[in-house]
Every structure is written in structure tokens, then in C-alpha cells.
Length: 253
Image (cartoon, rainbow, N blue to C red; front, side):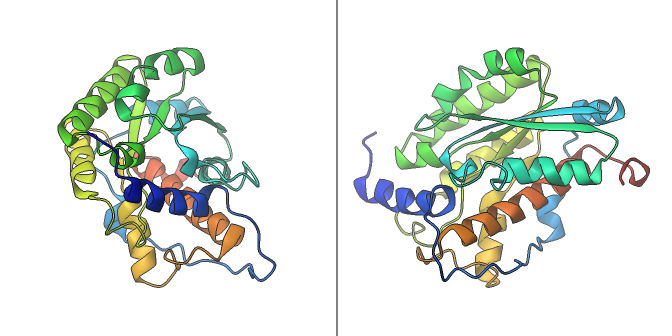
């Protein structure tokens, strides 16, 4: 299907906010409220390979993502870096490493074809696959999107890695420009079919926006907002991974 120029413009605006925004002198650094409803950080799908890796005190994680998984100003400030820091803090006896493989301007189908090679090269216990945004921008057929996600997840599992799916960002600026439900729903279906956890980034950010924790409508908050959102995502994701891996309190701290 043909791309929608209005949709692409709106998504680029928001992606720029959380990925490569310039700093502003009036952006006061203030601690963010990172609270997330418990149901959004709970999953019945286990991360057994992550659990085993933690027991062996070496946990390698690969984030396969797009531009929204980065902040140009600092890799350590982006959510993968914050995830590594939070996991290392909670699992001091475990060597934690989080690497990032950017797949910019690629559909889920295009990314899926390269996943097995990535796992063979990096041998992670866990792959966090962040996807959906570019497919939505391109108005990819939702059924084709679902098939691509399913094939990619199955390939990752067969290659020996646990999988966490991460869905789209939430942006009130683009909510009226793009139909997100087909992509969100299909990711949820694939997660259930393959018994993998879905980190619902969309719902979490929607909650933060509704509760007033972050003003995700404005584009004028600059680098400080991006850092705080990424920090909160990293914190939430670390809790989610530990929950799904059934890490006991004795293994933490």
C-alpha cells in the first residue's frame, strides 16, 4: 500500500523528539514519575533462557530497534543503556550486557529475515524486538505485518533466544494521523500465539501522558524530556524482564 505523507510527517516529528532532539537551556532536569500500573509489567510468558543465564551469572541482551531506541546525545541515556544499568544494579552478581542493532526504515518483514544471523553472531539469551512504527508509517497490510512478526519470533526461538516484543511509541500528536490498533493488536496476537512477553510501550507511555507525568504533545521540551522518558522506559523494562525470568529476591542485590 502507498505511504501516507501526513502520517510519516507526524511520526518523524515525534521520533525526533525522543531520539535526536537538541538541548534547550530552559529544560530543567526534574525527576520523572516512573510509576507503571502493575498489570503492564506482569506477564505469564516466561523467559526461561534469561533465567538460566542469570543463574550462570552472564546475561547478554540484544535490542533490535529503530531510531526511537537511541538518543544521539548519549548511548548510555537511551533506554537500552538504562536497561543495562538497572539490571546490573538489581543483579550485581551477574555480568549484564545490552547491545543494540539498529534497523532504521525497515519493515518487520525486512528485519525478520536478518534476525537469525544476528543471534548467531551475538548469541544473546534475550532479544528485545522493537517494531511496528515503520510498518504503520508505510501502512503495511496488518495481516502481512502479523505474519512477519510471527515468522521472526519463531526464528528467534528456534535459534535459541528468548524474545520480548516491544510495540510502538505513543504520541498524542500522531494518534489522529495513524491507525495504530491493527498493529498493536497483531503484536499482541503473535505474543500470545508464541508465548512470548509483550512490553506494551504504547500503553505505558499513554499512561504517563494521561497522568501528566510527561507532556508528549509538545515538541519544545528537548533533550531533557527524551532522557527522562528513556530512563523510565529502561526502568520499567528491567522490572518486566526480571518478572518474566522469575528472578528470586535472593538473586537480587
